Image 1: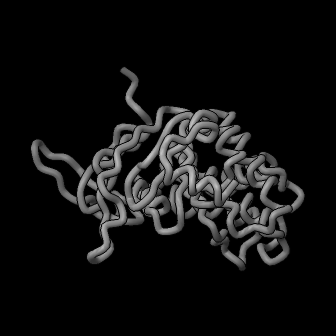
Image 2: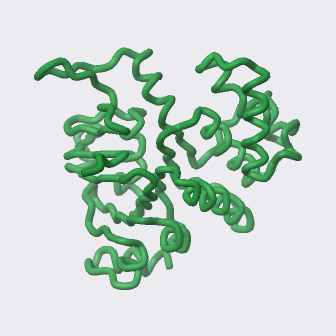
Length: 254
């Protein structure tokens, strides 16, 4: 059997007395696109943040490309990774947030170069060449010297995607990447994500864009109350939702 790119097993996460994730298990195959949907507060964004260890889990295990995230195994025992080891793991997992989090004092080109130069020690000339290629890929080559304040929200989000890709990740996580955008800017970001999926990038996408999920996703999971209520191929589950809670959700978003 081929090992899944992402393997999530019985993951639980609490914030104080509130259990946000209640034993989530999920596989994402190499090159797969999993779309995660659900109401606000259902745990979907928390799940993504657990995958790259921005949130620690209370129980369960997560593996990305065969590596146990956040822990090292020694025989029958495991222990938490040191911060430097955890940073090295995160280099392989790109994440794009709702807000763009670009450095306001750096140009689009400099934002994309920053990670490879500072984190990986890539020579500036090499990083610049790669950054220009990535800006071309997201159709922003003509905005390389613009600062974030000079870019639209959609352009800033595309720079954020290019910045994540500059680290050559094995997995891309998208946490509602279009939710902060004006409606007319959404499609330019989704277009980049479609191209990325077509190139074979493994992706987990928290989204309310059901058209994108239907077109691009290989698996759609509906989370409510910290559990997976329904999952399957997006075209199947969107056309014939089985659970009443999922039908009610779709009635609000479609």
